[in-house]
Image 1 (tube, chains in turn purple, green):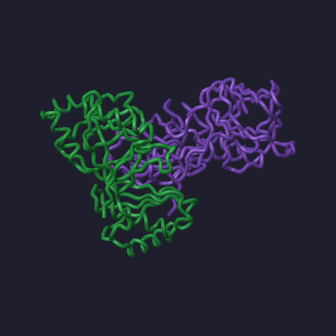
Image 2: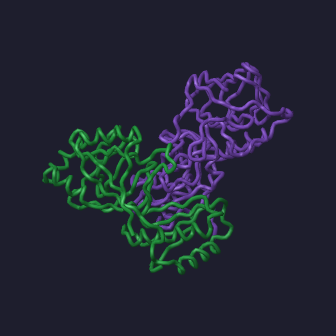
Image 3: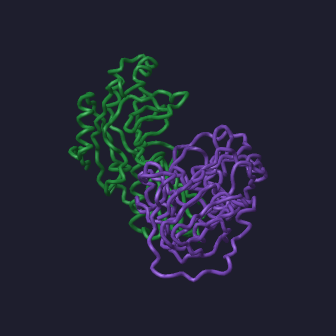
Amino acid sequence: MIRVISPGFLTSIQDLGRKGFANIGVPISGAMDHYSMKLANNILHNNENEAVLEITFGHCKFVFEKETYICISGADFSAEINKMPIVLNTVIKIFKDDVLSFGRHKFGVRSYISVLGGFQTDVVLNSKSFYQGVTNFSIVKKGDLLPFNAPQDSLEPTYTAVKQNANHFNSKIIDCYKGPEYNLLSHFQKKRLEETIFTIAKANNRMAYQLNETIENNLKSMLTSAVLSGTVQLTPSGQLIVLMRDCQVTGGYPRVLQLENNAINMLSQKTTNDTVKFNVIDLN
Amino acid sequence: MNYDLQYKQYGNQALLIEWPEKINEAILNDILSFKNKIESEQAIKIEDLIIGYNSLTIIYNNSVLNFQEEIARLKATYIKLDLRLDKKTKTWLIPVCYDEEFGIDLKQISHDKNRPIEEIIDVHSKTIYTIYFIGFLPGFLYLGVLNRKIHSNRKNTPSLTVSKGSVGIGGSQTGIYPSESAGGWNIIGKTPISFFDVSKQEPCFAKSGDKIHFFSITKKEYYFLEESIKNGLYELKCIEND
């Protein structure tokens, strides 16, 4: 078990999500940054879909109640075990009563802690990803006990860290495809969409990221249709909303862009006041 | 088979198929037939299918390498489509208590529409609604078609909490809140029936193409049913349609 001393701003259990239940309105959810989450699992030779802890903005503290191996990937918040710095993207041997804490922010927004064999929380509709109204819990709270299995065999320590792509955290360029309603935009609107440097608004969370800069919009509303994570919607007020992993399955605003899969991962390592620029990939 | 469909690439892992921009049952049935056919022919490579009023979105397991080829394959499937719906639909009988204790906005609608509360309840519960699709919240049904007489604009300021089971009217739509949530619809009643329950084999009993028939119950009956449901003693009633 891991005992939660301090859960930080927002910590939840996530795997790659709850796929195949859109017909009853259930969002996919899952880790915001699949790239970092999979890296954390791969380094421990876990199955890619094993449940991990997703930590938003560090500031958390955990105690391990039994030994295991862990790996931390994604955002760097100067993680320490018993106040000794540890290296991201390596296999870390954990002993009973070890304390893991996060400190000063270096880069990124979301960190992932994988544990050997994955966290053993409840599976609901084929997934362990927390989502309010679907799983019993929607966030990790102080005092929670997060179960994992005792290791069956020992893992070789890694002496060098797996190098993560720095571009993943630094690049402002968000690759995307034209969305289903892109062609309804005027030449001017398309130009604004592709040339503006957009700022991430304060309203950004697991469901959606709003952007501050607006685009004058006169598109008529459409009949409710599917939306996906990575869909960029243009609202009647001209605001752009990028849907993220916890988004609903349907929506009624024009879908002007669709983020490329890894661009969703990159965006989820950004937060309020960070800037992005859309790079539209033309497939034809 | 008689519609002119639009096929649009939606990212590199999904394809959107669109019917004429209308809400009607003929389109819904055509979408459902096409969906069933695609599911039976290509299940292995599909992660999910999402129905909208006039659309079907196919989400693939992997990126689609050649969209033109995929669209050609789908067009060929659509041409061969058998018009009759191959799956039987059901009409679900849903008890609703329209007492003013639950229907907190009935008075306001009655005032705005200049119609007695009894008439609003009568109009709402006499219509048989078609379930177009499920979205917005787990177990939230998009229903058609609400009688024009009782259309009422959404509230200017949404309520922070609308309780689970609340039945409401939002503009030209009616629906049931499957869980507690914020919401701007006018609440006219409450049902003790659960539209989303993960402890059940089928978390949501209703499906696209099924129908909903509300029937009015008293407050006493509401509390009795609520208790029976809690104890697992109530079986939801439905009629099989041919």
